[in-house]
Amino acid sequence: MMTDDEVSSAVDALDKAEKTQVQTGLLSLKFPRMTMDNAYKVQKAWVSKKILSGQKVIGWKIGLTSKAMQYALNIDIPDSGVLLDDMKFVNKSTIPAGRFIQPRIEAEIAFVMKASLSGDVTVEDVKNATDYVAPSLEILDTRVLRVDPDTGQSRVIVDTISDNAANAGVILGSERHSVDSFDLRRVGAIVSRNNEVEETGLGAGVLGDPILGIVWLAKRMAQYDQKIEPGQIILSGSFIRAIEAHPGSHIFADFGDFGNVSVDFGN
Image (cartoon, helix red, strand yellow):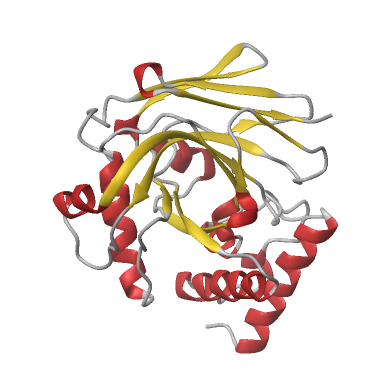
């Protein structure tokens, strides 16, 4: 287990990395006793620091729900992070150069909630609590190195959780749908970078059904005395592998009848 001083040290390292745009080393190496509970404690402390500086919580993201992302990171369990108001970008907007360290993009189905959820909820509970669903892109960024240069060790789950699940941004499409208007398992996206198709996928890639991502999140949050609140955005998990968003990248996600969403990255 980590001491309170070690938690504070991890938070300071993450915060410094984000502000200086220089990644910190693997927390799993620096704090080899770190557990998942410790990692969520680090995440919570870092988010609390951001809230004290004036930021507001607008929702949650669920990560590592698809086999594609789990295989890519050699991680076999989902994680979650907090969405803050400075992470929300307008559809078709341009991200200023230098805003992120190593941005990547994922395509997801976003849920916007009209009622609270927490604990051992069902699929029907999630449907009843959902205001609408929409196409979305998530921007990932890593304040922690992906691979340690000396040992060759890759990030593990405690690194990603501490790093707010690599959370950095969200862009919602303008289309809004009732949760029952589509079979979300079959909602898919063709995601292009600079007019070349990079990834495709279906909602079923997220735990078999994106709604099950919300079920998982509600159960996890109850363990930490948290809950999903009305009005919050929930990113249900990516069904594609993350796409590198180099400077000058134009990202376009075509969800077919479900809608589309795009973002540009400045040079």
